Length: 509
Image (tube, rainbow, N blue to C red; front, side):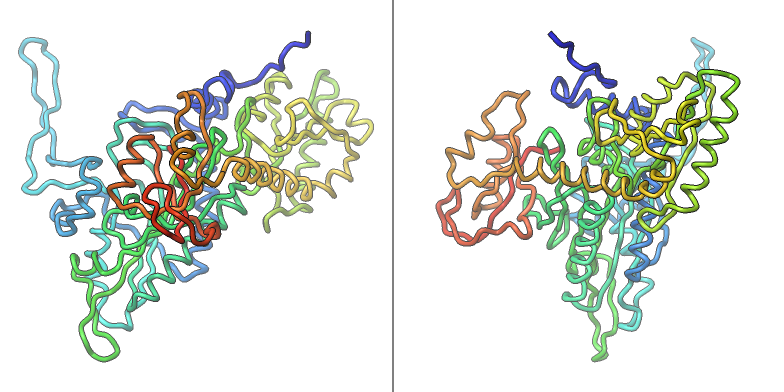
């Protein structure tokens, strides 16, 4: 009887998906927990992924007319009180600063010195959970006339939400994100902005991260606090749960009225602006891990990989070591100068560290590098290279003429990118089913905790209260009213009313 293949990550996805996820992060050296409760240290390989996300999106934001700015980390409590619905939505997640200095006090019994908060603030500050209120205050100073509009601002920043149950990248007390905030003279302009960014996020997830997200609108129960409309991109990951990967909100005039963001319009009348906000965060990295990785570790689409090709010199004999390393460096330089991918020179790294070749191989497998190239003494003589693709089995390899590899490297990277998107799309499509009655709906979720059902597309006309009750009962939620998946008139699974609205139900992170 053949032995089962040995995996680099233990446990496997099938054995314990949550623990597998943590071990993939550890194996790829992406991040680690920190001394600060609920926070993480993002290590260089993990931060390089965020830099790739930031670089692409920042370029796209600027191409669409947005500018970057920065606003304070500390928000006066009074600002949140101006927008009651918004503040209430974040109240339980707020971290509050109440003192402005520390004083040293010596414990008479132990002799140890403790630092004690002193200098209580007249008004507490909230560490930003999101910046609508403080950016709105700035907008109220910046906008006077219709000529000042539209105001298109983005901020790259960190935020804090006091999460009780944390998971690296997916849900931490502090995380990195971008938050866009815009002000417009009319409702139509603001809604067009909301859809522009929503489409941009969907394109980014699909084209760069190879994640086939489903775009749609949130129901009232799932809407951003204070928004009139919230649009989302929802990703299905390998355990069939959903992850909200990005959101774009039309805020109407709610924040404008609370923050007095008004202007003189073309008719010389006073009017309030219409605002939007939108954002993605380091949660995208968690989504990326769960969407593509396997039981040997991280799997990265080439468009986001910090290094797209890693060349590993195989040097069993000292007398040929220098020649092999020189050949690897020469190949890397040729690839950088002759091969482009995604509009940029291909990113190549030569791992010339003095360590065993097998250890190097598995390190790069676990880090998810799309193409791994090995050159040893025989390859040097034959002018061939040994190539392994990360989307294939970890021990699969092919031997190519050096020149052929140089000519095909860009195409191979595109093949890996396309294969990962196709695989993720197949998983998504195979695990979304239509449901037209409550019996089927109830059956879908009545499974063991170890078993993860897929998503249900259902006709829906239930109320806010009915949605929340059903969600609580089955530990599921309506992820969105999906764009492009509306099936026409049908009967609501709960109320029996006629409806043309179809929604996606799923379990989620």
